[in-house]
Image (cartoon, rainbow, N blue to C red; front, top):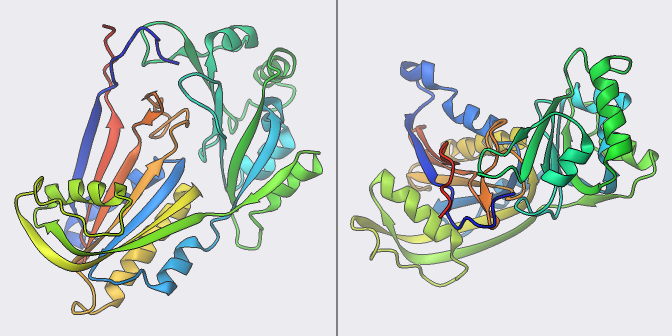
Length: 356
């Protein structure tokens, strides 16, 4: 939670990685884009822009939404997440991604489990003090109004009978009575295992469990001005993606060097996407562009990914800086027809906001 007395915004930093390629010449840089995706755990929105297309191809659309269902668990106490059977089955095997739902990170308690196995508690000061576990004050506030607790569920010593585990269990069961609605997705370690197994586990333990589906919207814009320069292209994609109009979009006033493309298709998916799913979607787009002749497809396409505003962490285990639900955790990838990729990350500054 941020100081109510401060009206300052946490500065944003745009970091751009350009000229990424699969060529052997830049082999040392070939993991830059996948690493960026792998560090971004909680993905709420994915959008695709394809110039020179009158519609998003059906086979591409179907492939993107395939296996994107996720689950919602109602009124879950946090101590259930350190159940040893649960940890062994779903945290230590495959990748579990979990996030508290419908919470405001500025004013309420939030929790999450990262696919790397960390349980993150972002708690208001009063609840933190009552809980009795060791954490750190939020980095992005001058006053200790919120605290962050990080528990490594995969740690060898975090097992029943060990002091650390027993203390965490006692504090969560006796001192923290809050319950959370959570959304989650599990990527099994083997194809023969069903991702729904995690939902069945909660159902068998008496919790209401719901299957959730990704929602999509799409539009076609005609006679659109598109910039030639890559730096301007990132800005253009943001303007284009946030427009809700089906009519022509004119951004030429903000962009000097433009070219006119007749048709631009846009599709947006909202739901809960794991990092492994985003990597699969990126690979699908790469395969799609490589499978089309240069006369059938534009020179580029884009993939934009927006994180959840209420995720306790943004990139890796970096604390999420958010004021007034204005989160700073998104990235855009531009895919070129020659196989090159460029990516721009939006992340919060390492400087604390100044109170005014």
